[in-house]
Amino acid sequence: LGGVDFLRRHCLVPILCGARSVESYADEVIQSFKNVCSSDDDDSFWPCIVIDHHLGPKELAAIFSHTVLNVHPCLYDAYGMTLVESAAFGVPSVVNCGGKVGAAALLGENEGCVALDLSGMEEEIRTETTDGKND
Image (tube, rainbow, N blue to C red; front, top):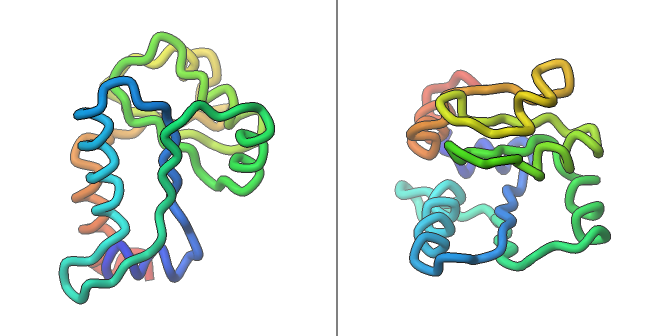
Protein backbone atom coordinates (compact mmCIF):
# COMPACT_ATOMS: atom_id res chain seq x y z
CA LEU A 1 0.00 0.00 0.00
CA GLY A 2 1.32 3.41 -0.94
CA GLY A 3 1.25 6.67 0.98
CA VAL A 4 -2.07 7.59 -0.60
CA ASP A 5 -3.62 4.31 0.55
CA PHE A 6 -2.30 4.84 4.09
CA LEU A 7 -3.86 8.33 4.23
CA ARG A 8 -7.12 7.07 2.76
CA ARG A 9 -7.33 4.05 5.09
CA HIS A 10 -6.84 6.21 8.17
CA CYS A 11 -8.99 9.10 6.86
CA LEU A 12 -6.07 11.51 7.29
CA VAL A 13 -5.87 14.74 5.32
CA PRO A 14 -2.46 16.41 5.67
CA ILE A 15 -2.49 20.19 6.10
CA LEU A 16 0.52 22.43 5.50
CA CYS A 17 0.17 25.83 7.15
CA GLY A 18 2.58 28.73 6.95
CA ALA A 19 2.86 32.17 5.46
CA ARG A 20 5.16 32.49 2.45
CA SER A 21 8.28 34.50 3.16
CA VAL A 22 10.59 33.14 0.44
CA GLU A 23 8.59 32.23 -2.68
CA SER A 24 11.05 29.73 -4.19
CA TYR A 25 11.48 27.87 -0.90
CA ALA A 26 7.72 27.89 -0.27
CA ASP A 27 7.09 26.45 -3.74
CA GLU A 28 9.64 23.67 -3.11
CA VAL A 29 8.14 22.76 0.27
CA ILE A 30 4.59 22.78 -1.12
CA GLN A 31 5.57 20.52 -4.02
CA SER A 32 7.29 18.04 -1.67
CA PHE A 33 4.20 18.08 0.55
CA LYS A 34 1.90 17.42 -2.39
CA ASN A 35 4.13 14.52 -3.51
CA VAL A 36 3.20 12.67 -0.31
CA CYS A 37 -0.44 12.86 -1.38
CA SER A 38 0.10 11.34 -4.80
CA SER A 39 1.09 7.94 -6.06
CA ASP A 40 3.50 7.31 -8.93
CA ASP A 41 2.02 3.86 -9.52
CA ASP A 42 -1.59 4.54 -10.39
CA ASP A 43 -2.09 8.31 -10.47
CA SER A 44 -4.00 8.06 -7.18
CA PHE A 45 -4.47 11.28 -5.32
CA TRP A 46 -5.59 12.06 -1.80
CA PRO A 47 -6.50 15.59 -0.82
CA CYS A 48 -3.94 17.66 0.96
CA ILE A 49 -4.55 21.21 2.06
CA VAL A 50 -2.09 24.07 1.73
CA ILE A 51 -2.76 27.25 3.69
CA ASP A 52 -0.10 29.81 2.82
CA HIS A 53 -1.27 32.82 4.78
CA HIS A 54 -1.22 33.91 8.42
CA LEU A 55 -3.89 32.13 10.47
CA GLY A 56 -5.90 34.00 13.06
CA PRO A 57 -7.07 32.49 16.37
CA LYS A 58 -10.40 31.21 15.02
CA GLU A 59 -8.75 29.54 12.01
CA LEU A 60 -6.10 27.96 14.25
CA ALA A 61 -8.77 26.66 16.61
CA ALA A 62 -10.73 25.16 13.70
CA ILE A 63 -7.64 23.39 12.37
CA PHE A 64 -6.21 22.16 15.69
CA SER A 65 -9.61 20.87 16.83
CA HIS A 66 -9.35 18.30 14.01
CA THR A 67 -5.59 17.69 14.15
CA VAL A 68 -4.20 14.33 15.31
CA LEU A 69 -0.46 15.11 14.95
CA ASN A 70 1.55 18.30 14.45
CA VAL A 71 4.83 17.81 12.54
CA HIS A 72 7.40 20.60 12.93
CA PRO A 73 10.25 19.40 10.67
CA CYS A 74 12.55 22.45 10.65
CA LEU A 75 16.06 22.14 12.02
CA TYR A 76 16.04 25.49 13.78
CA ASP A 77 13.26 27.63 15.17
CA ALA A 78 13.98 30.09 17.95
CA TYR A 79 10.67 29.28 19.57
CA GLY A 80 8.37 26.99 17.56
CA MET A 81 4.99 28.56 18.24
CA THR A 82 3.11 25.71 16.53
CA LEU A 83 4.33 23.35 19.26
CA VAL A 84 2.76 25.51 21.94
CA GLU A 85 -0.40 26.01 19.89
CA SER A 86 -0.82 22.28 19.31
CA ALA A 87 -0.12 21.52 22.99
CA ALA A 88 -2.87 23.98 23.95
CA PHE A 89 -5.28 21.80 21.97
CA GLY A 90 -3.87 18.53 23.33
CA VAL A 91 -2.28 17.63 19.99
CA PRO A 92 1.11 15.88 20.13
CA SER A 93 4.01 17.25 18.08
CA VAL A 94 6.98 15.69 16.35
CA VAL A 95 10.18 17.74 15.96
CA ASN A 96 13.43 16.98 14.16
CA CYS A 97 15.86 15.43 16.66
CA GLY A 98 18.84 16.92 14.83
CA GLY A 99 17.56 20.44 15.26
CA LYS A 100 17.00 23.07 17.89
CA VAL A 101 13.45 24.25 18.47
CA GLY A 102 13.00 26.33 21.62
CA ALA A 103 9.54 25.17 22.63
CA ALA A 104 10.52 21.51 22.27
CA ALA A 105 12.78 21.82 25.31
CA LEU A 106 10.06 23.69 27.18
CA LEU A 107 7.37 21.07 26.51
CA GLY A 108 9.28 17.79 26.34
CA GLU A 109 7.78 14.34 25.87
CA ASN A 110 5.52 14.67 28.92
CA GLU A 111 3.64 17.43 27.10
CA GLY A 112 3.42 15.51 23.82
CA CYS A 113 6.54 16.77 22.05
CA VAL A 114 8.63 13.91 20.64
CA ALA A 115 11.93 14.24 18.73
CA LEU A 116 12.43 11.96 15.72
CA ASP A 117 14.91 11.94 12.83
CA LEU A 118 12.87 13.58 10.09
CA SER A 119 15.57 13.72 7.42
CA GLY A 120 14.23 12.10 4.27
CA MET A 121 10.76 12.04 5.80
CA GLU A 122 8.85 11.97 2.50
CA GLU A 123 10.68 8.88 1.22
CA GLU A 124 10.44 7.18 4.62
CA ILE A 125 6.67 7.70 4.69
CA ARG A 126 6.37 6.11 1.25
CA THR A 127 8.61 3.18 2.29
CA GLU A 128 6.87 2.69 5.64
CA THR A 129 3.45 2.60 4.04
CA THR A 130 4.45 0.27 1.21
CA ASP A 131 6.11 -2.52 3.18
CA GLY A 132 2.99 -3.63 5.03
CA LYS A 133 4.02 -2.49 8.51
CA ASN A 134 0.92 -0.36 8.92
CA ASP A 135 -1.66 -2.93 7.78
